Length: 137
Image (cartoon, rainbow, N blue to C red; front, side, top):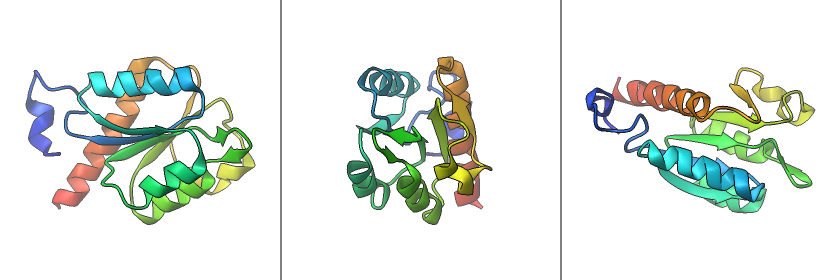
């Protein structure tokens, strides 16, 4: 994604971004996909479990990610670890804001469910823009 994308008034805030979505609740996963796609992003997933998410988190070209903390009986901690190792920025979008499984990522933006679509877009767009700037430097 080029920095010029943000200067195009017709482009969505996430135009050209590839957003990994890890969410086990079907309706929320579809909402996230719709929100991000309406802003021009390509959504990877949504993935509903750790195994599927890990398969893509470790290899796909990802601009940023949205992770639910709890995925059934699993946590997204292994996915967060892989993304962090690859320097892929992410947010947690979850009801669980104080889960010990994510203690290593207290610096990561935590968005409490439910959130306004504009809050999700703003958080992801900020990560994408920051990553684009870092890659360009």
